[in-house]
Length: 106
Image 1: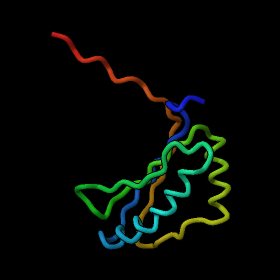
Image 2: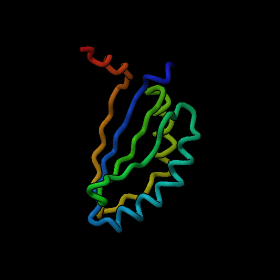
Image 3: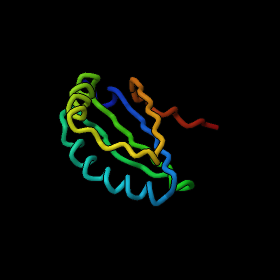
C-alpha cells in the first residue's frame, strides 16, 4: 500500500497536572521506539501542547488496517498501564494524503 494512505489514530490525553504528563510522556518514549519498529508502522509518536503542558497526543499512522490489527493484538498481551489522573480520547481515521492547493496567482 502507498505510504500516503492507511489508517491514522489520534489519542488525546489530558493529565491532571504538567508533572503527571511529564511522567507519562517519559514512560511512552521507549514504547514509541519499540512500536516504530513494527511492520506497517509509519508513525507512532507523542507530541505535547505548547500552550497547555498537561495535554499531549499520540499520533499513530499505519500502512493498513491489518497492520494496526496486528499491533493491537500485540498490545492486548502487554497493554500500557492506565493512569486514573489522565483522561484519554481516541479518534480513528482512514487516511489519504492530498496535495496542498497551488498558491493563488495575481
